[in-house]
Length: 584
Image (tube, rainbow, N blue to C red):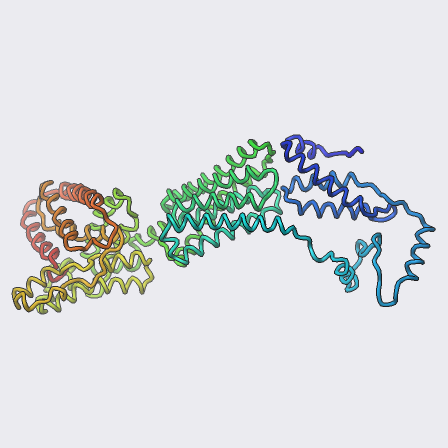
């Protein structure tokens, strides 16, 4: 039998590998044979109806839209009428059938038309279809069970990785819920893309958007593993001859998007560049993988894949801004926003407690390079440093850096009350941070930046006035808790070293090094670093970074006449501040 094929079908067949051709041949023969087993009259719409049924059946095959259309076209053209109209016999059969029909019941013959084209569907038609069992779709339970097992294994492997290597995500139900929701959205997006001609490009867009969201919220390493998982998921959902190429393209594009978005660091210009790179990468990878597996790619598909990459980056940024507070993570985008001096609470600190603000800036300049060198979150450290003293807004003039030569209110207070007033700024800062809804990580750094350190100056003053046996040292220690993270511990060290460094006048490199070593060792011996994951190697790197930064600060200053006397006076005040003197 000769079947006329279109040029597009011929080109598609020529570019298809042998194994896929065999599969297409079997599917085409099965669909055509299924319709030829039924009755196709030459004087009715049976032939058109059979072709329509083949089209519907082909659309349900696990093939790409192109191959589904091709199978329907070839099978439909192969159909021929298998019954010719005999008017006399038909009349006799109708009469016989009419006589046999009971008044209440109606029997539907195999060759009867249940619903003609253009006819309005009524309750009788629905009853007939239900009686014939056509409203209960056939399910391949074996294939469904195998698919269920495959998806279960995929989820279990993903969960096992998170439990083993991403403990923070595993223990946070909100972050786990985000990860699970991302997997479900990936499956739904891949499935929805099948109805579009550019389903491959849409699949890449969905995968890159979700990978970037996971990277910015949960980390690049987890996002790359997630990319592998959704790549396999894409192969399960979009079955067909291009499965392997689509899996590879999805994994490569989403992994690149995850890495690029994490490396961007949340900076606006870098994120724009990342969006462009993701779009270009999607187009290139899509073309290369399609060519490797012998699939033709149209210009529309290439353009669609590039645009999908661009849009995915934009969607990811918007989604991250909406989800970061819900999930309970702090992203670089949020940290950059908070570090802006125009933030209301920082502006208040600048105007109401300018000395504390300038001190916070110096602490941030000291801590940030150290954080980069030990691999901590430098942006989180800098932002935490800028906010760590916001508790001083409650009583700004009780702190020496904000007094500017005015009367010190602590001179009228007893040492214990003076210490309580000073130590309250950590608690006040934490409460203010919760009130203005700062990220939990920054709020914890505010509460922990003094740990349980001793307010030395009020304590020693109390000992002098009341005797050591009458003074309880615990009453002069900050309430804590001690730093729980490397970032919080680094803030504590930078804050103490910065305060002590103001006691130095024209120091040498050795003097700066000795001061940093003494402060860090003192905090370590006092047990303030016991609950943080800080290592001895980290402390050595931090000390060297502090020394380098302080050395640059001191040796960039210009000396003017009569400046040395002024510096000595400032150093004396700063010395009292480091020891917990009233005002610190």
